[in-house]
Image 1 (cartoon, rainbow, N blue to C red):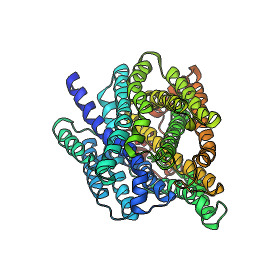
Image 2 (image 1 turned 60 degrees about the vertical axis):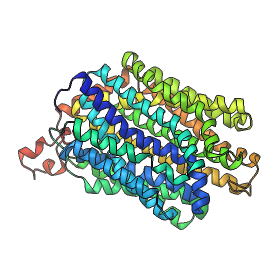
Image 3 (image 1 turned 180 degrees about the vertical axis):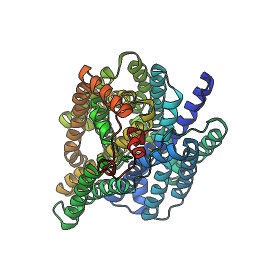
Image 4 (image 1 turned 45 degrees about the vertical axis):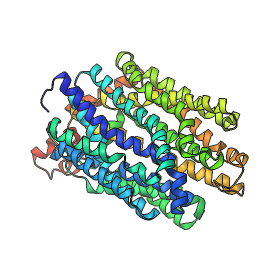
Length: 505
């Protein structure tokens, strides 16, 4: 990528942030619209979960493939293709005649979305080469998530109440078209010096793992945790995971380079991303249902109730990014873990839903936690890697976010459904006390996610952890790993050069 002026770099950042805005806004707007969609499409609880998880599942499965494809054929080309597909998918979602077609069109959106965030992050990390400037850029990038969380419930609530739930997909159209035109005009094309080859077996194993696991979790409350079908999908997920662990290290150009995980900061960022976004997915899902189905609030009023949390998430990421740039990721990660765990405890121990003051306190605490965590996740994942590996590292971090949100909605939805079923009620029919009691295990799970962020953040941000990152980066840059064929003497000497550079971005 050619060297850009400061103004040019800021313009590239703004265009990339536009793509993140429509992807993030789509998630928060959809949560507010779930009850209206459920009534209009006669959807079950599992159906509501699938409208969210069909998107995040496809997104998580294809992020790394999209990143490597962009490295190979050009980041701007793939980024523009993603904008076209996401905008088209949004238009199709707005006219979906049934739940099944809506889920299919959400998957079309996700294919486009998979070409946006990791490719945009790769563009940013290759545009902002100074570590401090890059940390600030990532902080601004994280701030867009906060803006989407602040604007999403309000915009979505207003649209659902005034026009209907289908209109929530319309807002993606002008932003997507504008981002497409600006990308074509202002973002230069760039490619990796040495792009990875496709890994169809690894890609199939990832799709099998995530799809089987998510299906088993979402459908288990209805079909039974010990039913043959659920056990079959659980076994399929375990087999796919085993296959990844065995197959990927044998490839010279793996879809997932397991050597990355020798870096404690990178491994920690992955675990923290899964934990934090699982908490976010569950938090939005359970609160949307409670405020609208149990308290009887309109979509707009529900959005206003969640505004304190969203406003904090809007303000904190740029501040967190600056703190990461000046002091490192440790303080934001510890603060995030403490705040998220405290928020979960407010609901798990003190039944914060039943008192507005406690509920808003819990919302603000969650906003403090989530607003602090996003910038250090991305910065920690990419900063310990060579520049040539930054795109792959960012793609793994983005994948971890989507996996976390997918599992959060799946697990927490399943736990809540099981709790309401045990109380003899459904989401919209039982008294508030039944819902509060059924959701208590949910809040303990969210508390556990916060504790995980705290502990892993402390472990992965110290001197020992930085040493593992440095040694891993040296291995990735200097120590070629021969493929299985090379080890057997079947490849030419040139094939032996297929090394960590095979995963470069």
